[in-house]
Amino acid sequence: MVGIISYGVYIPRYRIKVEEIARVWGGNASDITGGLGVFEKSVPDLDEDAATIAVEAARNALLRRKINPVDIGAVYVGSESHPYAVKPTACTVGEAVGATPNMTAADYEFACKAGTAAIQTCMGLVKSGMIKYGLAIGSDVSQGAPGDALEYTAAAGGAAYVIGNDDPIATIHHTCSFTTDTPDFWRREGQDYPRHGGRFTGDPGYFKHVKGASNLLLEQTKKSPKDFTYAVFHQPNAKFPQKVARDLGFKPEQIKPGLVVPHLGNTYSGASPIGLAATLDIAKPGDTIFVCSFGSGAGSDAFDIEVTDAITSDMFHRNAAPGVEKLLKDPIYLDYALYAKHKGKLVMQA
Image (cartoon, rainbow, N blue to C red):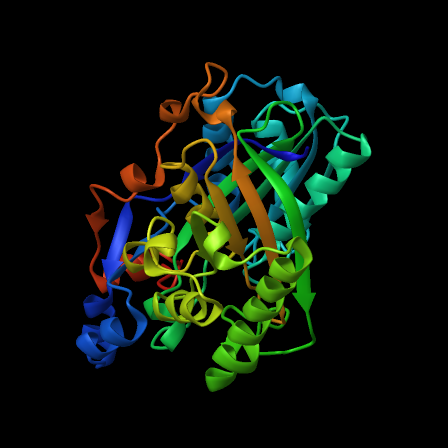
């Protein structure tokens, strides 16, 4: 059975509160936090980008379990903020963690679901016998134009998953996808910031695709929401995942452990992978986890996951790397000027 061998997360310590962004642009902070359910978001340091975040997340995954890096036969990094338009992030990550040059590597881009698409690819390669381990990462330093609605939630962070079939800590029993040509969000070549279809982001974007993939997985596995201990949905804000969970029949306590967006923001390709990591941080053998990502453009990937006894065995050391809760503690808060500097919105002229 193919599954998760190990996992790791990285979240920068810097934060900006939603009320600070609202102070600059004249918005009502209480309306924003009440509507989105987001109170603050993570901000990358001056020397951090999607590549450095991916490397740190991957290294944390390898801290938790003794894996020979040369056995990693594939590295895929999903992001919509790759530092280079033409220069793969995956090669940098592979070399940084010590993987052999005898590997396949590529960058993925599908808005916020590129990380889960990378997991699916690694699953196929492992199951076919082409590789022993695959490294799938979702990492972003999300963009939001100054004053745009996206700026209140666009955050930084990433999660890495080692996929294999050698005593996985969590077995992935099934996965499926639901995809259509729905251009609710886009960024053209050369543009610094994405644009979005406003009200179309909810429907026919997020809700149609998350429900489509979720219902498809439940139908194919002949399961219902009550068969899962936990559930994780893509979290661009706190409102959307809570609503879609309720509509599908999941209870608030099922999504609570993975709902980290209120104090993290939307990490785009890292959003649902980080939510899954937060759930794995507290999961016990036998727990079942339902996961459904979403990426604008648009599509969703759904997963049926079951935690195994290996998560509490001597081969896996959950405390060897920081969990999501620890990474969210002790933040360093920035004012808007320093935030703009960190995000490259302020550039010193020569």
